[in-house]
Image (tube, rainbow, N blue to C red; front, side, top):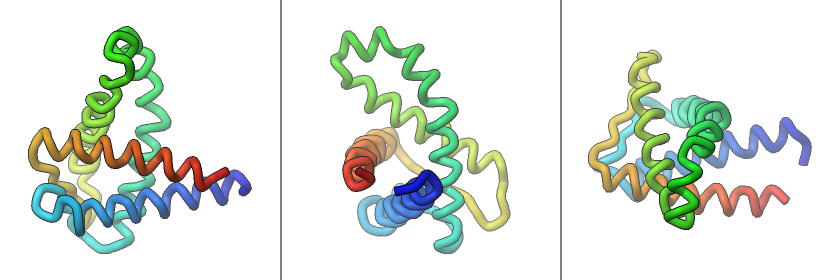
Length: 125
């Protein structure tokens, strides 16, 4: 798979994952306003933030990650989701807003997205 194909694949797959999370898994605690095209915008912003900010946070939290044998990565993922939702709502894009309620929703979404990314990378090869 070429570089552009990988990027498009990840955007579409992440958009589908967010759609599934908001429609079936967390219909009352994770809401995205707008149509299906907004899920692609959300996936692009999520991928961009994970590419730019998450490596720095992983470096900073490495000692905690080492001590907890990787379990702190779930908290880091929940923190990234929280930062991502604040960023999207702060940008005030037309007809796009996200509402995530509760710490457990952030944690469970972080776990589900981690597992989904492992599966995506497996399919990518």
